Length: 446
Image (cartoon, one colour):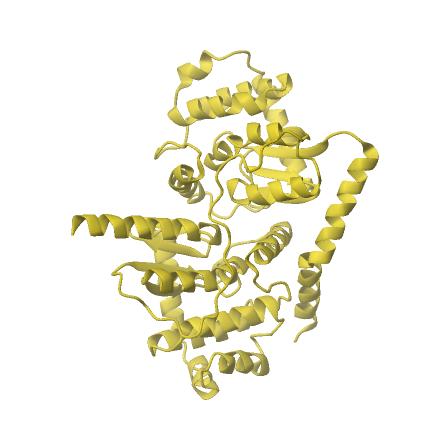
């Protein structure tokens, strides 16, 4: 294993260590107690971001339940240097995603196909900044957002006082600078005790930490602001997964370098078993091997967030041997050959990803790769033969084309369920909901 991979492995183990995370959190809590006052909670809101509108609907409940000093920052879209990946596809995905998840989470978002007009966004920003200065942002922003996503410029004009446009621009720049200095790039995010929480997906994590900090108001009822997705389930012993007989198909796009793909594997395979779906594997190259740039801040943020998600799901994670480059290519060659031969690609993929993401195994070295291949019950000589054949590249490239051109996405893990393109290990519950809804409608019509 190279010195670079060893150094990155040490860094990832340090970042994801549960004991170090607890120490860091407790240090923040001690500092707050010494300073006195309410617990500081920061929220970063982007007027034309669908997920910000969903997150804003949780603010009033958070303030009512917890003794926090809520500070609001207005922000804009991140730059490429900050972590923006695909500005051409990202807004359309956010619109689709927000509309799909809102009904399941007790939130609302219109099934709109357009981003708001810039004049509407500017007007809403002036109203939002005035609400921040008056101290009633948590109440005002939901109504403002409803008007924004309805395209109701007249309704916004009819609202109360508005800040100057120049002040809004300055506030947005200050908000983005603060977000950047604290180590993040996304809007619809909360920052508490040095930890980040994105949108409604991490709302349960935020409330767990607020409870751990002891800042829940004495009279506050139990529960959260909005209904969270189903609770994480422990991973299963895969054995040899089999496709079922439901007649439903899910296309599964994943990368061997993506921590979130690794966290999705056993849960997706379990979904196949429980619902009897046909799971179609579509491996792709990692983003950085497809020309995308991922800043160091974002890489660290992803590892920290993935570590927290791994602990919630009971999945080993953190001893990472970055497989980028030769490690990915060798592993993909073996996976594609196994898929084509009708072999147990699931056991193989899980073994390879666990090796790279949790066990510090270098996929670029024969010794490490062989141990993982044989652990999955596959023949090493066949794996060696697969690595001599470059035919996998054409298949992986076609998967990339489908991902980006047909689905309008760019990152993984993601899923195609009928007409829907679903992105993220956070959305496995949505994949299941869509499959069950499809099965119900199919049964009703038969």
